[in-house]
Length: 50
Image (tube, rainbow, N blue to C red; front, side):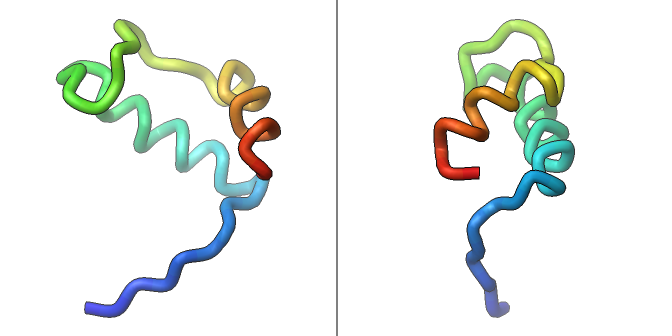
């Protein structure tokens, strides 16, 4: 299997949030207790070069 790594773009943010929220229930990858919204993650995205 081959992977291509590229910098995330603004249009990727909804998918990033969907993937992130899929881990919230198990708390194995995040300490968040409830899902986040795209708007809530926008500041994080902007701060990390998005």
